Length: 394
Image (cartoon, rainbow, N blue to C red; front, top):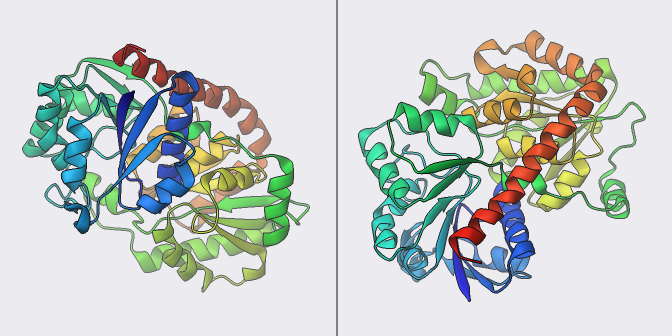
């Protein structure tokens, strides 16, 4: 039996990470049987409960597992006692390099030469690479790339990062985020959740809104300058939600895809006047498949978390990006939605609301144009499984 190690942030707290793992397992096992997936995780119980229908071995990353999150014996063993290592999502960056609670690059680079000595290939799998801004980050990334016969990347920013940092890389393959293949549940299940939550009762429609707790901290690091500010941001979003409800006459589904964002979501809700028109849907309560299915019933999604945008497009729901991370804007451009991005430096009450009004009015036309782009990305994401077969001689 072949073993595949899957490296990512699979704690159960992020619907996007869950969708990556779930669709990766589905795509590979759809093509190949007799594979055991080794999954280092902070939350063994969650991984077993949600993905145990696949042949997996969840490897705990707690201190009693001799691990300081990613840095420890489980990750080491998963990288030397396997046939292939898949690196997912966006975990190879050099911010907070020496903090294994936050940074994966330093640990993976530490063990990558040992994997290479054992002829175990490392494959960035529908992943983003970077940002890399330091010499030690460049050295670490190169150690990983030296063991990578292919790099399947999901965005142009990754290629640009490699060029800018003059990193040597073997063949680069255009991929797409695994989460984009999340399937919408049947109508009966969607209706059951909608009735329970009181969703989709407004004949004028429902708009989905998503924010994140980081606000623009990533943009500040990359571009420099002053942060937008939490209080100013909360006030802006609260005012925007009220204006949407009062002027467009629609309801809001406040969509949370990372449990750490519940706090700032509640801060916004404390300031809105039209609370009865807002329903909160969180991944603390619902799976990534259920959230995607509810998004399919929304006319438009305004999102900051990249994976809220990806799950929205998987449901063929048009989107507007409040550009908090480089990968969010990059993703929108990948699916032909580059006109629907608003950057923090350009955002105020009027500019955000004007874009939302325009997005709502044009949602049908936008959706029609977006669907073929999304289907192309779905095909790219699924085809990455063919490279797995090639590397394992399956």
